[in-house]
Every structure is written in C-alpha cells, then in structure tokens.
Length: 157
Image (cartoon, rainbow, N blue to C red):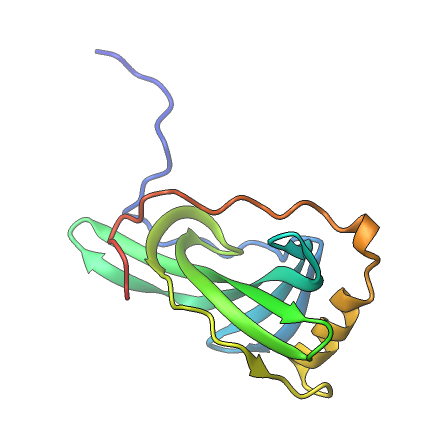
C-alpha cells in the first residue's frame, strides 16, 4: 500500500487564522469582517488615475454550501477600483474561497459588470480610497493577473 502526503481534507470546516500583515480592518462583528488588502494596490488597466485593490470578507461560522462532500465558504475577495479624479468606485469579480483571508480553493465566482458609483469621502471606503490615491504612481505594483482557477461550484451570476 502506498502512503504519503495528501492535500487538505476539504470535508473539514476551515479553522480561523490570525489576520495577515497588510490588511486594514474596516468592519468586524460576530458574523465576520471586511478588510482592505493594501498588499494588492495597483493601477487598473494601465491608468494611473485608477487604483485597484481587493476587499476581503471573512465569514465567521463558515457557510456550508454542499453537504456531500462538505464544501465550505470561509471568505471572499472582490476587486475594487477607485477613480482618484472623480471619487467614484466600481467592483468586479467576487471570488468565494474555502479558507479565511481569501485563501484556499475557489468555491464559486460572481462576475458582475462594474458600475461606477460615488462614495462619500468620509466613509470607510472613502478613507481607504484617499489613502490608495496618495500612493505615487511610480511606486504602484503591477496589476495582478486575473484569477483563472475553475470554481468548484461554478459561477453565482
């Protein structure tokens, strides 16, 4: 009989781990939290007036999406793009993941067409937007590639 390492057992509920460095807590309560991932700030599609970053949502008490075999969603990430000139933002492609902090297997995706909408400068998102817009364009990271992993449960569109 062969024995060896196996990948993580997907039938177990994910265990909560400490918040990684580089995330800014926006909201947190007993159902979960929302965090801005400052590690991912870049321009968007080459336009230095547009700033792209992820918002991460953790779901305390991961959601069981399927029972046989058990599949859980513990977090999601969504691409946020802010326009530093017009003070508007749009969201694109929410990815639901099996582990906290937007890690693990891709369980599902929702890819809405981003719609520009204004945000109040004094809101939590407005404070983050002001912060990312103050980053000099020359120091921005390259835009991350699109996540092409196939979701286990498909798209939620």
